[in-house]
Image 1 (cartoon, helix red, strand yellow):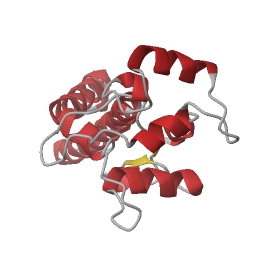
Image 2 (tube, rainbow, N blue to C red):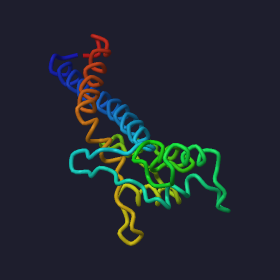
Image 3 (cartoon, one colour):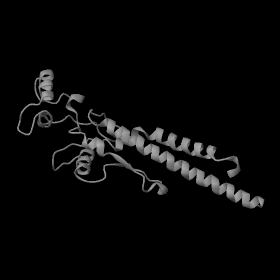
Image 4 (tube, rainbow, N blue to C red):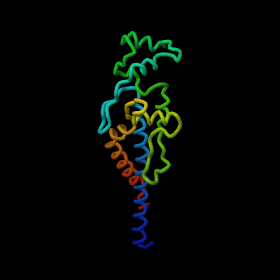
Length: 182
């Protein structure tokens, strides 16, 4: 094989290693963002970057969390009332904002179907939970629901780690190529 052909093969191998490493790093980054978003649910969040802090829940929302559909106070509701005296929002994790039955938390996933184009999607893909998640993320003036963003702040909070993961994954992939591959 000519030296020129070896050079071309080496450059091609390096390009492939960079692409593979970047894709692996993006997959890891997507999982990191999803995990961070899931962690946000259930606890009031401060502002992050351009995203506002979460407003406290309305008393009727807190009450709904702690009563049955027939209006009977659940055991957890009795504990809440004992601790706070009413169903007024406490501003603590006891209000469990964005946690009803944990459907939203379970539904947050990653989609790597466009990884070759450099895209990883994180969120809730479809169904009623997706609608609920979007309303919570962006708010709804029509329904008087303030925004409680959990996905976009998860990206902002992990920005540096995402860049580091992609960089490290590229370096690791290149390092793992056998010397003869170049």
